[in-house]
Length: 126
Image (cartoon, rainbow, N blue to C red; front, top):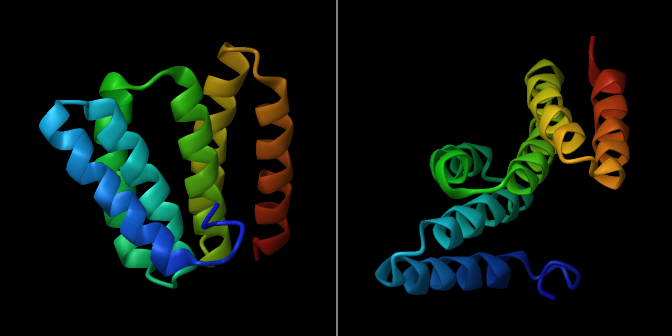
């Protein structure tokens, strides 16, 4: 809901709050998912270094506790962040990882979305 209304700061606060509930519950997947979404919101707020930090933390948890669907989505999302930041080559690496996971689980709508994001990154290559 906060994303759709462009209340990025509020979304960041809510994701951080979610993490505070996930940790004591011992739910590492919940922490990873929240961190991944926090990386997106942080990037939308213009803090790409913070986004990278959250993404790195998220992926250490998602690689261990997440599903291939989680990984398909997370790598595509972060690829988009890298593309917008002006790092399309790095974005391509994340899109390739996303496509690998999406294809493995036959999530073809996500494949199509990732390919669209990858095409945008190609446009940004110099």
